[in-house]
Every structure is written in structure tokens, then in C-alpha cells.
Image 1 (cartoon, helix red, strand yellow):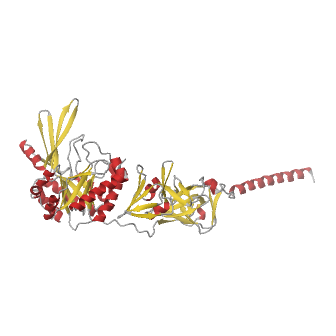
Image 2: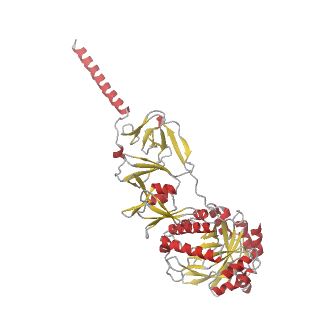
Image 3: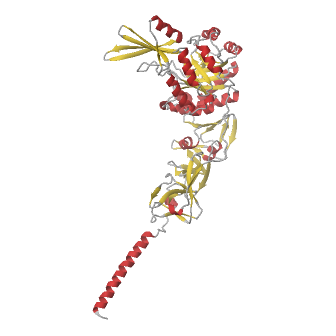
Length: 571
């Protein structure tokens, strides 16, 4: 063989070697890795901990796994599963409510009270670790709509509880590997046979890159699979056969025409006959009888059996009002409502008063609730509703108009547990307002109605309207204007404008007559309530089939207003 031939063969062999090396490199690049990753390394969890999966995602907090029992953090329970659990951090008591039951559990106990009956479990229900409260999942399940399945090595639980929500699923078209990242070279977490079911994890079916999608297996392994190995995905609305507990309500067979009666002493109640003689169609009166006495749940009461008998003879129900006015500055709502014993004392005293004096209903008027006290307040509402329901007592709850800043009052929940939700559609401009304006414009009432019926069934809504207005004084003060006001009854407001010689002008935007006058350097302004403005508000309120109306307060109205109210209530 000649030298040139040898050089040619060497060149060919070199090229072949390069091609072989390139082919091997390409083959290695496109060949999926068979490397596996242990789940115990992928999911870092201690022996006494458990990972929590909610439908298709890994929850940020771990639970406890002790003696083969799963415990979820209290915040996990109320935020994800059932907000009707309440932890009293002072007295170390967990409470839960159903329509007719109040359940109480002491920390560390393997028994619990259902109203006054004791039930037992084979495990401690509530544990506290490093000031973190945990609740046994099996106990949570007794009072909640959830399903779960436990898997070991590592410890993990897959919980379904977001019923009514849609989730995206797909089946494996062939045997497929679940990998740690969207790359064929990443380690394998699990191999799933053809037909295996996946739920798309956190991504709504979006590609994760390299032709992969993020999924979760039925046993809680979250990883990536190649989308080409999945059949067409489909959406499923999460449903089961669980029957939610029924919150029955007392519903009247006629529209409510309620009026509040503010009383400050027993002598003030003697005027009931004369005040009612001027009304028409009133079927509920709410006297301001109950006040908070202390942080232990005791109350003061002006409840009068003679008053109730007079009202009943006129066919009028009595829904006694309890408020959170604290003239002495001694009431701490966080303590009063946060402690189980004081909540129980307060609700028991109200129920005892109602039963002993034949009071038809309780009107709850707590207006000083904050975001910090809201959960305790709502627990009190639930517990009071149980006792009212079990004793045939009407529970109505007064609320500000629903706005973004007061969502913590949770009128949606109130609308479930209470008989009536009362919306106070006034104080649009109030004593402390920085500008003069209407106490209750027709637009304000419309917004109140719209925002309420989005959350509460219309047949539970009572729209409260004012029998008063405000006289606003705008006076120069330094470089600015000082604004002050005082409340006027309907009659006194009209008389004032007449005495001042004011020509009133109708304002379509607010739906009221407006008048103003000057005295010295001050300007006085008033948006009046009269029959015309009131009818506009009534027409707005009853544009939805609401339960009725209420008014603050008896004695401030003009006599002619009752015909207008009665006409709408009777429709």
C-alpha cells in the first residue's frame, strides 16, 4: 500500500472517528437520563412532620405527624379549610360552630364538648409546639368538607377541600417519567404507567419549557413531564357528595318595617304609646336596652316586660338592641370577645333576658370592631346565632355600608348564620367628616344595596335609613375652613330652613332638597330628608326584593313619612 493510500485511509478513519464521537454526543444529548432522585432527598421532611398538598400545590407550612395522626397548623385550618374554627389563645380553648352546636376543646384533651355533651377521641385534638397551635386533621374532618389521603416515605398528605373550583387534568398517553426540572437530563422522581392521572400543578397548563409541563401525581409528587406524552387535558370542577350543614333562618311572612327606639332610662320607655301613635305599619321595634358592663361578658339591661306587652298588643315584635358603646372607656373588645368564657357569658345573658321577658329578637349593634378583633367578633356572632336558633329568637346584625375598608365584618358570613343583616345606609357624611354633604344620598343607598346583595341573600337584607339630617357650618379658621355640624330631626330641619327664609332647591344627584344661608362669616348648609327624598331611597332599596327597612330613630321623623314607608312595605 502506498504512502498516499495510507494517508487517505488515515484521513477517512479520522473523519469517521469525529463522526462517531459527534453521533455519540448527539445521542447522549437526546437520550433521556435514567438517573433517579430519592423522594426523601427531594422532599426534606422530618419524621414527626408531614408535607401538605392542597389539590395541586405544596402548601408552604408543614404539618405534624405524631402517632400516625396528622395535625395541621391552626392558620392552615382557618385559611384553607374551615374559618369557623376559633382558637382562644388566652384560655387555650378551640371552638367550632355548626348551625345548632358549639364545640369546645381544651388544649391537649382527647375529649370535647358538643353544647353540654362530652365526646371522646383516641388522640389529643389540639397540640401546641413552640406556641404554634395544631389541630388533628381527623377532628377537622368531622366538621369540614374535606377528603384526604396519606402517603409515607416521605410523609405527605394530599387534601381536597376547595370544592367548586376548576382544576386541569390529563392522563399519560404512554409510560412517562416525572422529573425534577423541565429537562430530559434531570433526575427522575417517579415513573407513571400509561393511563396514570396527573393534575396540572400551579401553572394552568402553561408550558414550563423544553416541551414540559408541571404536574402532580395522585400521591403528591410534583415534577415535570413531557407534554407530548399526555393526552388532551380537561377541566374538572371539584365536587363530592358532602352535605353542608343547613343554617335555617327565621323568615317573616311580611316585609319588615322596623324602627329603633333610643332609651336612656326606664322613664324614657313611658313615651312608647305616644311615639307609636304617630307611626303606621311598624311591625318591629328595637329599643336600645342592653349595654356592655365589663370585660367578663356581663350586661346592663333596661328591658321592660310592660313595654314588651304594649308592643305585642299592637302586633309589634321587640328586637332588643345590644351595642358596644363604651362611655367609661373600660371595655376591651379583644378581651371580651377573644375569651371563650366572656363570649359565653355575654351570649347567655342576652338569651336569658330574651327568654325571661319574652323578647322576640336580638339586634346586635357592634360598631367598633377592628381588623384585629374581627375574628373574635365573628365567633361571637356564630355562637350567639346558635343559641338564638335553638331558642327561636330572631338575630339581626347592624352593619356599616359594605366598603373595602370594612370587609372584616364579613357580611357574607353574617348572612349565612344570622336571620337578618341590617345595613345602616346613613352617615355618608358624619360629625367628623372633613367636608359638608348629605347624610344619605340616593347614590349612597344604591351602592349600599348593590354591595350588600352581592354577598347576602336579598330576603335577609334590611336597609336602614335616617330620620335625621345635619346642619353644616363652614367658617374661616386661619388659612382654611373649619367644618362642624349638628344633627337635626326631619321636622326641626324643615322649620330651621323656613325660619331662615331659605329657598330650597332640589338636587337630582343626591336626591334631596338643598338649602344654605349665611350668618356673619359662616356659611350653613343642609341636605334635607322629607317625603320625596325618602321615597327615592325606598324605591331604590326595594328595587331588590329585600326583607324590609328600618329607621334611626323613632321620634325624629315627620308624621307624613309613615304613609310613604307603609306603601312600600305593603307592596
